Length: 221
Image 1 (tube, rainbow, N blue to C red):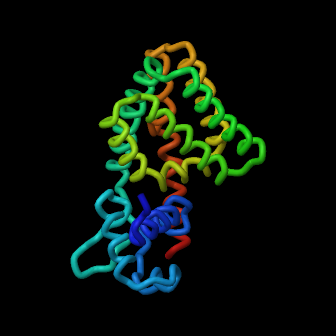
Image 2: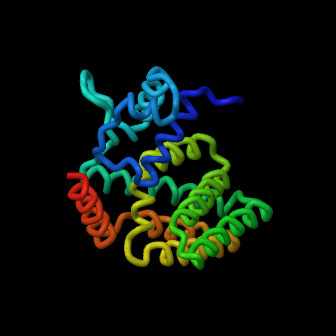
Image 3: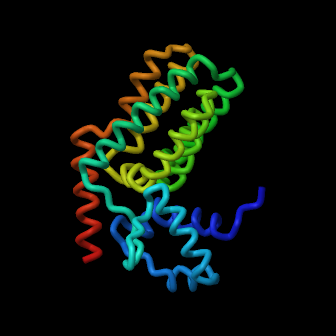
């Protein structure tokens, strides 16, 4: 099915948020976005409403839209839920993924390896997204896949920012490798444990992320 113009714009603006081109708390000017994408304001407004429905953009009456800025407590809670959803995906995938699907997941992780070796954080981010999407699909549970995707989208900017933290990319890849091996062994408990560790926002990592976000806010001011 061909995407509508507003959906294409939604994806483009979401990508700008995920890459850090649009930062948390930054106001979104409909006129500037319309000029950037060479469209009228109407599809821009529709795209922002769609992003608002999933929490990526804040839409407030009689005020400009802005990139959502989560408070620290909510961010921790969202990562806690994400860890539970991905652990469930992992358990079911360990039981249900075919040999061919496991190989496809391993190939996605090879993409992560290549990006790591080239010290390319952007390439790693996209290979990492593919890895997680294949894991969701491996659960073979449509309701779970939908919920995992929705929360993953809301956390995209913060998951991407994590990759800028010290040694996080290499650590993420090592965790991927362990997850792939546990899936090949069909070890549901091991996959569950590894996925929780992979996603959970530990105190040190969270402190580093908050400091990074604060530095971005200082630069904006």
